[in-house]
Image (cartoon, rainbow, N blue to C red; front, side, top):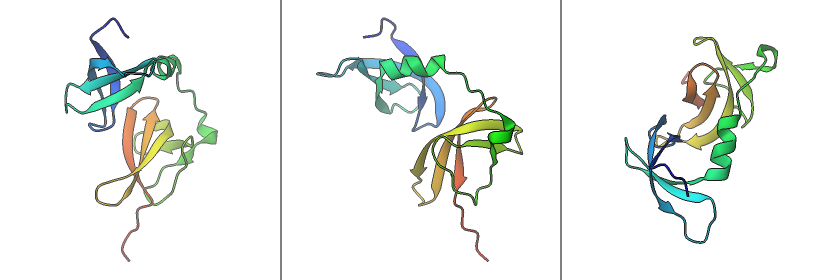
Length: 125
């Protein structure tokens, strides 16, 4: 288990990078630890091996391989996108269905960090 009491981690509930308090180790699973977000108090299990590898990766994206972001489009995990309003490039990390039934994607941008964006938005005619 980690020697520090806190770690900075992306909280899927808050949608932000926040300080996580270590609660304890997962019984029967090596390298997995329970953390609690200090903002929303949501508890989550983190694989420390994958967590440490994730900090070593630096996003390097070419503008030519990016697809322009639009809320009407559908994106796959791993797709490189360019947000024209923010002048920022990022990769789709995960997809989810929101509580309102809309589709959303979590994108890790080079400048803005991790952001939640809407996808497959059906506009009324």
